[in-house]
Length: 94
Image (cartoon, rainbow, N blue to C red; front, side):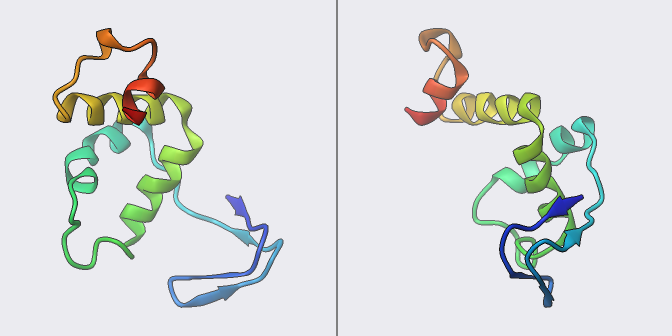
């Protein structure tokens, strides 16, 4: 559940400030399973506005463990070792 702090449009529907928007909650295992599909840019046509990608992004913003896991995978994809940085957040910003 998300309570919006400003008006916006979600999937073609106008949502007013303060209205509750329900999205299907994604589990951590699902988030990790979709990493390859959703972390490689450019995204496949139609993916950006899909419910699956939206739920994946929502999970990455609401689950600190998965956000850290995601950043670690990106650092590794860039060819860096996490051992050379004080934390995953510094490595991700590099």
